[in-house]
Amino acid sequence: MPNISNSVSNYTTSWLLLMSFYCFLYYIMKAIIFDMDGVLVDAMPFHYEAMKSAVKEITSIDLDKRTFYLLEGMPVEELALEIFKLKRYLVDDNGKKDNAFNQKSEEVAKRKKQIFREMNIIPKPYDGVRELISNDLRGCLKAVVSGAAKQEVDAIIEQNFGKDNFDLIMNGDELEGKGKPDPAPFKVALQRLNLNNTEVLVVENAPLGIKSANNAGIQSIVTLNTSPLATGDFIDLISEDRIFIDTKSAGRFLKEWCIGGHES
Image 1 (cartoon, one colour):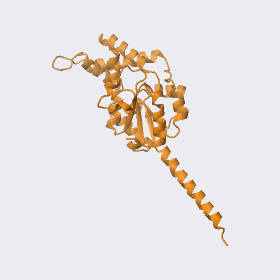
Image 2: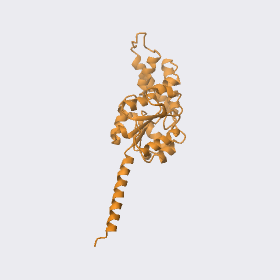
Image 3: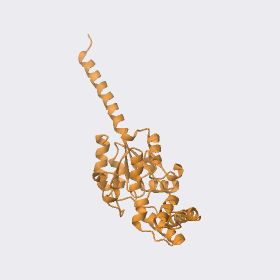
Image 4: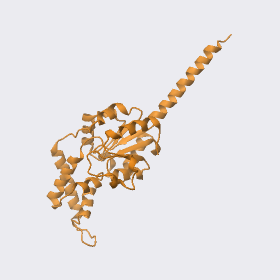
């Protein structure tokens, strides 16, 4: 006579294993995409100083910190062009650009990159971020999407976190000049992660980064860290409760998002 008790026990065990497997799939099928500079590591002051020096040297324009941070995320050449427009450099009162407009932006971009390389620094992680990445977000896939050069991204991530702590690392060299607020970087990340936009959360520090996430249809949060920007600079882009003073203080939100599901 069959042992009914054993049959029930085996069925229950199989059912629990199957449910555990589905739960496992559910939890790993989410991802957090981090910007690198200004979110994971304190690199923005160095980028600002390099850009400020390059712009001053080539154009005599004094680049203020606020303007730089508002435009952060663009490829450097495009960033230079926007600075020129704002400062009315090589642009007449009717908006007509001088023939040297694009050439000067190329010169600024080249010089900025040279100055930054000569600084020869590896920016350090913000307080609590290494622990967050290494131990606290195990319920999610983790990705980095940065506009910085491959050599720079690889060195910073490896020395501060280890590449193995991320499931995807994207750099500016592979984006073919597609910078923020273009949604392309985040859309490519979705494809490579094999996830849809409701299963991903972006962590950014700049308005153009949030615009890029919005344009890709991905929810996001802001971590200001050492930025001179404030909540008001993100009006109409993101709700105020999604803006955090720093990445460490966003840790609880990120952990709960990984565990609790897809918040809208």
